[in-house]
Length: 240
Ligand code: C5P
Figure 1 (tube, rainbow, N blue to C red):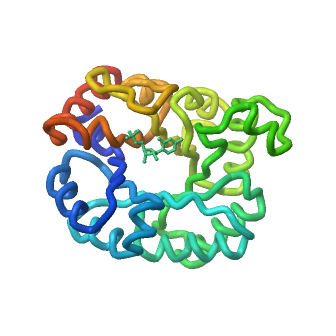
Figure 2: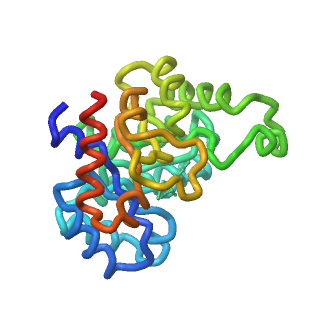
């Protein structure tokens, strides 16, 4: 794998509160990471301005808003995200087949089979345990539900999933080589675990079959963030 290919696998989690910090992180990490993830906090505070800002600074965007609603609402929200030119956007697979299929059909109709945002499904949040599932009436083990929802997403035309590093291998086996797998919960050998529990190193996650790694604090909390990103690239290249 080339250095650029390894860099393109890194999605920096831009977990910041406002616009001023976007410029700072874009400048620090331009050319060091492949994409910037904008989540619910930043988007709720700033709206599409945050997306435009990252794009103006030359960055690609993963809009992580995890839509879950009736099919038409999710399809139209995802369409608006795609019109902003984001590279990745996501929804909850628990919204069901029709919600996912309607979304993909709506995007394909607008973009006429051309390049469009890739749509990812969240299967079971990594914060959920078997007990959480039982509490909402789901009597299955977490890995079984994850694989079941990943397969459902694939059958609905969804491009990939967001999953914990532990589940990457199972999903790769069940959904084949072309299904995108994006994983958070990645911790390089040099970084602390923070509040992440079931962690894996960047090289381990890529070797298990992950296409992209979402990484926040190991980069943002480092004394030299650009250097930390380069160390992660080294770790990925050492394994694949
Ligand atoms: O700082 P850290 O590397 O833990 O950041 C990981 C990012 O991935 C955060 O934005 C977090 O919200 C997100 N995420 C996660 N675990 C999930 C889903 C998303 O850590 N299961």
